[in-house]
Amino acid sequence: MEKLIYTGKAKQMWQTDDPDVLRVVYMDQATALNGKKKEHFAGKGAAAKAISDLVFHYLIKHGIPTHFIKQLSPTEDLVKKCDMFPLEFVTRNVIAGHFASRYGLDEGKVLPEPVEETFYKSDQLNDPFINESGTIALGIASHADLEKAWSLSREVNGLLKPLFEKAGMQLVDFKLEFGRLSDGKIVLADEFSPDNCRLWDLKTKHHMDKDVYRRKLADLTTTYDKVLARLQKVVKEEA
Ligand code: ADP
Ligand code: TMP
Image 1: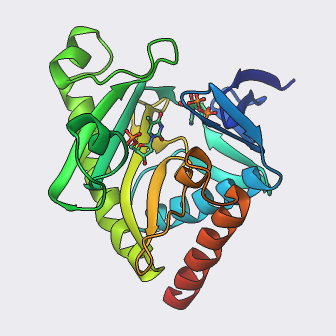
Image 2: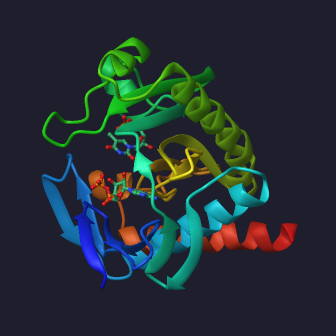
């Protein structure tokens, strides 16, 4: 019997008959301000999932270990169940978002090298920033775990920056999540979609990610569909 084990801000996680496998359902919902702002967008779940599946396929093809098993339907995937690190691994290539507001900077300057920030996943606490020693002290992850997660994050950045560039988009920043499989292996989990990255059109600098919802700039599903179409074209050309 399947059991709903978690309803998040964008997805539902269902336990399947196999204890090591989850069914993920992408919902037609977008949130901002840590869930305080919430809205329904028809087709958004399928668009986000299609982008995430394409990106995960690309990463797997290039040797990144992930939780992905297979697609079940346009809004559902099967994934390997992980013991998740309650951490968000954010990589920034360009000054934007909270990096700009926190330090009083204008958005848009390319950073001399990627900035890496870790946040403790807690809706109650508003996902506070946490450094390496804090993570260790709280028993959230070991030095080795963090080293593995960051080395995978760097590989992901190295693979995705040029992929998005070929698709006419600048990969400004992104958030990854990692978890441990039942055999102890650390893998990339969760999703990679414009819900958790910033993408700017290379020529116009127009936002092509969840900022269009946060900042009321354009329709979310239409924007995600454009990102998907561009990525599909590049992947097809590469095949
Ligand atoms: P949030 O929890 O931030 O509201 P979502 O709505 O995307 O986010 O919910 C998905 C949840 O499932 C996240 O908390 C994420 O950490 C977790 N998750 C993602 N992939 C896996 C996995 N393979 N195994 C277990 N949990 C996962
Ligand atoms: P930030 O500038 O708001 O800190 O966001 C940096 C990146 O991380 C951006 O691509 C959006 C993503 N992100 C999430 O996916 N979830 C979150 O809870 C936050 C705060 C950011």
